[in-house]
Length: 247
Ligand SMILES: [Zn+2]
Image (cartoon, rainbow, N blue to C red; front, side, top):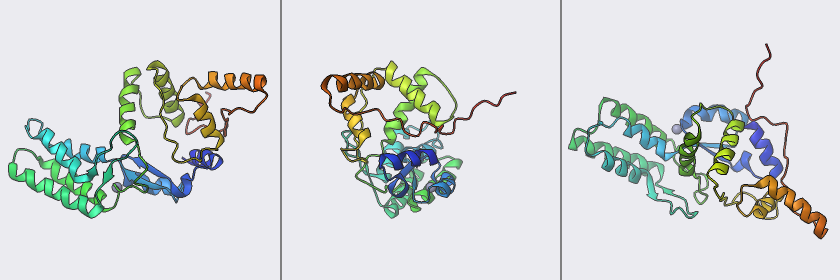
């Protein structure tokens, strides 16, 4: 995260002061991350809150899918339209009230909650009350569902353990190439004249970035005018990847 912040400094992205990181296990990570980046907001993805509660629902309960829908409604005021408009969340106090309501309603129905549900609700309500599900910039999509979709894309290629950001980026690149995906980035955190955004615009969504980079160099020679460059920022960064210790 420190290396990522250094990179953002160079790119003009205010990660240190305006950044938000959405992680599973928000409160466990917040303290450690704030040692390095005290201005970073660390929050929770709604899907994990729901998932923690759903994993305690009786497996044979016919109400399962209905419980899932009600949990979503308790947290989200308006769903994302998938076109760049993000999901909007209820205020913390409203989320707490509605989660308690869902717990109560299905307790009356019976056959839904298990012993573990009480504890799951206790914890997740604590996160909601703590503001862990509130967004720092509600108008900016956090793309956490996109992130979850990536898990299945990557799992389709290879099953691996959590490792470094470097490995993850390599896996993402591999997935983009193999599935031949067009990459859509909304560029909400950088001014349009920033060099990285100009290069991104030149790729027009294509993932063949090195090819485009060399084509732009050729164009530069032919036209004699400057073309956007693929930036090489902090090449010394290794994002948590450590070299094998020699015997
Ligand atoms: Zn939390």
